[in-house]
Length: 518
RNA sequence: GGCAGCGUAGCUCAGCUGGUUAGAGCGCGGCACUCAUAAUGCCGAGGUCGGCGGUUCGAGCCCGCCCGCUGCUACCA
Image (cartoon, rainbow, N blue to C red; front, side, top):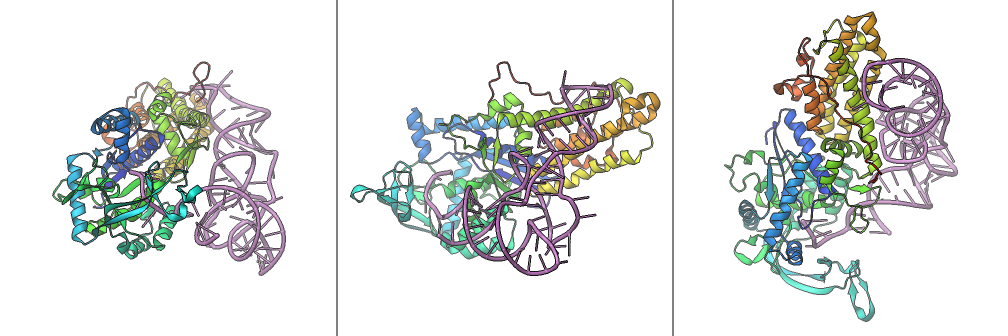
């Protein structure tokens, strides 16, 4: 990966159900990062997709009376549709049931095998059919008659099956060295600490195949087995780059700049994945970043609590851009966050409608009425004008710093700090009063405000692409001048340019009749 | 149990290598303005910085103990 390329992925979603807010959140955040990097001049490849194999898909399909492939097709489409509804700009959407992925998975398997890291053995342990999981002896509780039970209360039985294993244990030292030499490989830091602690405690070899079902990628040379979870799912990130064909035009994007994932699967991405890659002799991703979870008023979303919200419906209710803004501004990226209807409405009305929307409205409507609908005449700049402009131009640096560590909320904080400052500037300069006493000065104040709005419009595009475009449209900023290279005085608004009539940027959210609340 | 982290205004959180009257946003109270999406601006209320004890000329920031909370402690993706 050259310095100018940026490859970002979300985790691939397991589509045995409909997409939920957690999926939406990860996609929105990744999309904002991808868009930021594109606008900042990078050659971006942004990937998302679905992980469609495994027993649960088979079971869900049975329950619904569908062929499993039909279920996969239907639900994968639901995830694609969610992306559309949220404005995701992914360059590809990978499905692990695709032919290209079979090739890639079998190729990496072969690579690991060639390295001597795969062997066949008995996978044994206490298995709970209901939980579909193995449990360590220490996790079990004993009931009457010596029967043993999983933490969930489900009965367990001793199970022994043939399985291929990956020599994960062999990579402990190399992994620790990786974490030591590249401190930002895992983020945020708290996740890094956990992983280091975990690996330091020793690694066991990993069961990577099953012969108890067939819905998966066949193991090369032993079609009784399908690959189990790890190899199949993680490999998607290189499948999309054309692996194993290194002459594929996409191969240049590997290694990925960052895998954006939920905090619950950090270990798989920060331990197993690099080990698989090391084994197969493939370069390692630059970074792995685990975001937090969203809760509804502090409670986990769950069907039984009835607080599961459909992200597509939310986008319709609040607007795609405002919804994106809310989650990216309200939740420090990497930490858990809570949301509620009240919190969303509060943010939308305060930050979007009142602060930014109204700033655009109050200034641009004055321009429209008093400056012949053109970019105002810029006279000599006062120290106050210079100060606010300097702050605005300085934002790109702050945003770059924040986004380099995926601190999206800090970038937005910085932008809104300037929005607030601009409202103060506008009130202090009182162009409505200057209209009578010093029209030329009024024009300069309006020009300065419009120029700040131009910069704001450019910088909000990653998070709110439509709204950013709308604001830039109102300022007649040409399409070719909408990347971050334009965040400078060099590309400032030119006095006399004709402007369209301003339109509301962010309407206030008003409760529908007989407020349903949330 | 072990390891890691956290506990600062009603709420969500900032507080750099310890140093004058502990900060922001939201919420709340008052005032101003009327260009604007009943928007905005100004002022304010005011928290024993979880508790106790230390180190220090001086601690929210260092040390010890205690209380409370969270995460991790592998085969569910």
